[in-house]
Image (cartoon, rainbow, N blue to C red):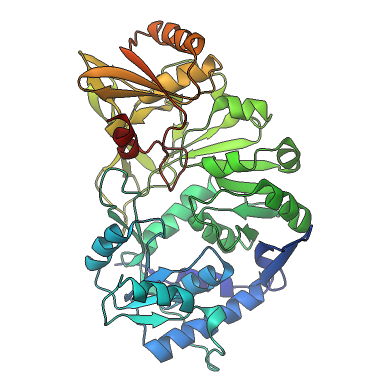
Length: 476
């Protein structure tokens, strides 16, 4: 029998934290050394949730299990809306704004939903470019409604196996595929993440949407990125300095790209703990800014977070092939689908059984291996790994070897017309080419040609991953 509960009820379980600030968002003020601060306490958050959920139920008849598109910026409004929809037991569909228009249409056409929560400005845009059909109902977010319902409603109990959130992969190898997180899976992922993130009384800056929910569930204070923030938006260093001064942030949860954006020793000196992930971290960066000891790196996939976690201080001592990503999460089973002895695609399965929790192995699309100490080691994305004349070429083995030899340039392997090329980002340098060639020859990699590019194109979402489609277009 499925367990029934509503995760949002936890916020209503105690009044101990009512006066504590739940969410903070800063925005730049023109010609000012300060930023404007918008905030919301836990008691205010609860009132907003009850009121907005009542509005959605009575005005738009949103039912338990109903799918609703959510197109809002990273904001306090976003989290009031998410929690209100969960309060009703609805299913939230996230489609990120970086997705191209034609891809967006394909995604929308495959989902049966006739309601979207979006700002009035956003509604004008999507209507003008006809992203949705004529029958779609456009619903304003909490901040754009003059008044909520005066009679709050009760939450809906939802079964573990019911879909809570539908998100989409990056689509780096084609059309983004949908990933369904059930209410039961959300609860399990909270338990998994809680093993690695200390429940500590402090102010956290978080740019990962799911980790904001973890923080709220713990009654912590979360500082959100500015309203114009998207995954591909660089964080401004000057802005972050002001934000630190205004809010007293002690921990940061940032993608690797955003971590590079705010690279400043004065910022990092004031931060107690750094949580990052979503891409490979340059070990030299962590050393340069003296943050190895305070950094924790998460490795995961869209379907499962985290798969493994690694302390930064241990990365510098790793001397084997590839990039170490830590010991696998104890909630998971790992299976390597070999392409050669001991190395292959990483497949992951939950050990925990229950409604809404996938029972089969999930392919990560990453190539790696388990070493003798039980650590998971990454060798590259499957789509970027290739066999050349009987030898497998692993991008992360090349990357890790060059980083250990203090090479700061991005260097990636590439096959073109049957030839093994090495693409180097930066100005042409015969001396650098010879150094890289000697290093790679020492580990039995023998590129036939070296190509220097001023800028290697990046994936628009992560900004640290290579956009191979764009790269192919440049090299043709």
